[in-house]
Amino acid sequence: MGNKCCCRGSEPPPLRKPEVDVIIPRPPHVTVTIDNPLHENRQPVIEDRNRSAPKRRIMVAMYNYEARDSQDISFKKGDRMEILDDSDGDWLNAVHLITKERGYIPGNYVAAELSVESEDWFFENISRKEAEKLLMSEENSRGTFLVRPSEHNPTGYSLSVKDWEEYRGFHIKHYKIKPLDNGGYYISTNKTFETLAELVTAYTKNAYGLCHVLAKPCKKPQPTMWDLGSTYRDKWEIPRMEISLIRRLGRGNFGEVHYGKWKDSIEVAVKTLREGTMSTAAFLEEAAIMKKFRHKRLVALFGVCSEEEPIYIVQEYMSKGSLLDFLRNDEGKQLEFEELVYIAFQVGSGMEYLESKQLIHRDLAARNVLIGENNIAKICDFGLARVIEDNEYCPKQGSRFPVKWTAPEAIIYGKFSIKSDVWSYGILLMELFTYGQVPYPGLHGREVIDLIEKGYRMPKPTSHHVPDEIYQTMLSCWDSNPEKRPTFEFLTHYFEGFNVTSEVPYREVPD
Image 1 (cartoon, rainbow, N blue to C red):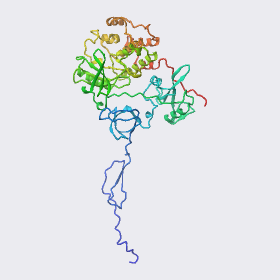
Image 2 (image 1 turned 90 degrees about the vertical axis):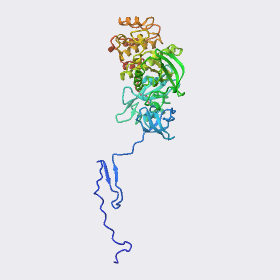
Image 3 (image 1 turned 135 degrees about the horizontal axis):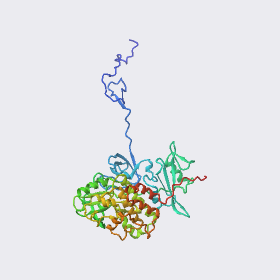
Image 4 (image 1 turned 180 degrees about the horizontal axis):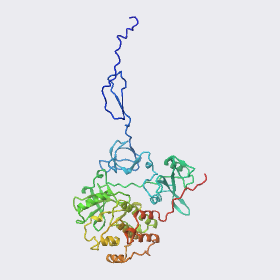
């Protein structure tokens, strides 16, 4: 009585035992806890130890891009975007982190934030010869540089730097960037770095024995757009009203080629095929295949207008036209020997890709290679000859059939293969190094067939400089046994390394 506090009232009820009768089904990685058994209305807290917040994918723009239709968004170099969906392949669904716009962006215009691919000096997919070509541009001064994956060491890189010496003029030097066993990179063993970015930063401040301090990154060329816009990412029939034909560029075996524009803004080349040239169904089947093949040395096929005649083939516009016409005009006639070798390399690279995909061109010739700015070469019309239904364009007639470019087994037996394309590449090399001279000058198609069967091969030209080594390569392409002809992989590497010294090791120079 006297010991009880008046404010306590009666004794509190006994503690309730936590509910244990209800079994909550759960996977083994889920833990169920009760926050406080005194609070009987408290809900159980369920924790999934395997589940974590989804990681945001932030991409940074490497180039400016102007939206082409209502489904994609514009951005400037350096802008950041979060990827929402990447299931559409070349086009990523994203939200712009500044404008908050949502739409599609071309995947080859962006790189993962803070990745080595997002660095201005990193060039992901170029060869040594391509690096030299880019760096030797007149806009690049001494010390301009780039870093690229090593072609011989899968975990290493190469540093390419533009240099100048009085006795050599401008030239390119290459240095091996080697990986350390425990992570990190080095050029010289007495200077090691944890990341490529740290290495590059260090050499922008001190040459440490390089030919020159690293001055500025080489400008990256604009990547190829494989579609006219995000609207056409999964289709290739283009409304004819969207295509304007502005001027005729030339006439081919199967129709005309025009310079045009898509929606009055994007430059395109348009092939108009003569009526009856091919079955529309067969062409559409082939076009669907052709559109899937993507390589920087193949002309991009944007789509077709096939619902009425004439069929339009809409493709990437190359400003300098066909290689054949280019070689014969004033600009092409001024090409130095090294430029010709570079074109041979580019065509070989594109054909190496087709070789890897087991796709036969069937009509490889200088007329079917296009030239763009900076003398970039791209192969066009690959696979098109397979669906041509022109009776005059066949071995039996011989009039317009490209006998002088075609392997004997394809002419006589109709056996086309990647090895018959190699034969054609050899003829293209002769066109290239003679600045567009007609093969087998003075001979007609039937005469060529008869002579080839007897073992005749085009002689080394006397009117133009063709090194013995390159002529021997042409002869290897014209071996009567298709299996003895070189592969395009070999030919690409041959012209990439032609007349080029091996990559120099770092030359130690005292500090």
